Length: 270
Length: 282
Image (cartoon, rainbow over all chains, first blue to last red; front, side, top):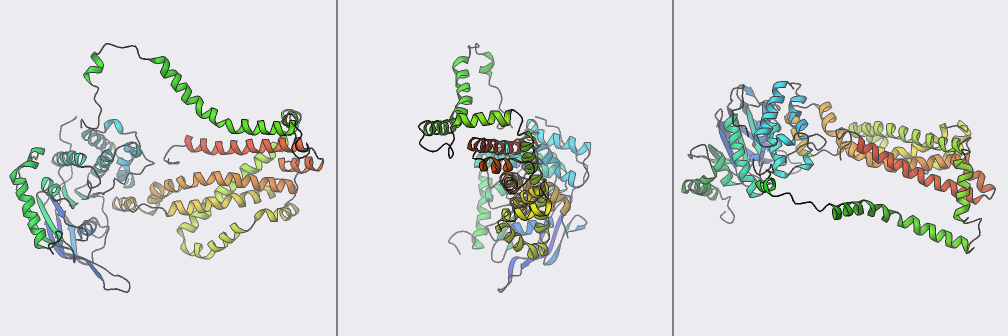
């Protein structure tokens, strides 16, 4: 397995959420506030998780940053760019791998570059390196249906990174995987992120996953969706599986659970 | 990632090479190949046996059910001698043209209905009504209008083949996975690119199965028109031979038609397999 750093020519970008909110108009009913006006600044190269129960607006916020969901009030900037529509510099990884089953792994990975008409030898070289990095170099010509769930999600992460984005947005990417595969992918994601730094926003409902991966964890609460608190994760990097059983790790989890309890988002405490 | 790449264990390399038990395994793979074929021959064998038994005992009139050897004789006299070549060719040609026309019209109109809501609202009820209408009822009219050539066959055949393709095209183009749609949007794909990479391949996985139904419908339409009246075609042979009371020849045509249907089905299946997955997903 190659351990050399992958070349990355793009500069890192910050994400600034300035009072952005989302209101859905419901026909014949009171309009639904999916996300209260929200402030959040993600520094260039930072790894921030949005954690919360269903209905707290975490996926809505992610889609707004991606330009897939309109912003009702307020604004979001990625670097210097005001978000109004999807942009190739921002890549998404979904809960399901969303690989096109009629294309090989290789064609799936190159699809974003192909669609943006920037398919160059450089992109191909990079895609090949990334596949090698996640141990799937021998699976280039396979079809998604022939891979396991964990392998498919690895391919979808490679697809997101192959187009050299500056920002990576991940929407519960590991929630459909079993515990062992998930933990393996945590380490792999961190390795990739350290090799090719990106600004990452990671949506999850799994508190320990958020602590293990992130620099900061935004605790979100529902009805109406909002960011309750942003918690700094002061654990050293690089992080290794041994960290999972240290008291410091549990302290962070406890701290975040306390915030959820305060917001009335933990079962039975409301 | 040691978890995903199987690494050959050391034991495999160093262990003394034991002679692999080839013979039983070969026998087993042979059995695995032969078994499904053998099972598939059970039904024709039973049919043939019952047929032979019933006719040998003269349980029914030979006019109604001729004995198998008489049908074989007819196949020999008419088909293998080349006497029916033009009839077989005409039926095959008519069916293939019907399928191709039905496919082209079906995909074209299906796409139009899937993408232009106004066209669907205006015409889809009538397309459904047209589907419910028994199209072979107008076969005599088309023969009167268009003569004894291929044209009336292809029009009736295509009109039957067309509907399954239309509904498959509409369903396939409308079936978009929300995540895949979000992915295409997030990578900046326009409508045409989404069509090329997402909707068309998905639609193809609907259209191919519909072709099986379309082929059967086309053959039905073509045979019906040929029975009504045509210069060449197996339908005409059925009409002619039954008017002479030549049951063995009629049965011979039925055998040919059954084989023809099977061959056309196989052609669709093989085409689906042979085309690259980007055109024919599976």
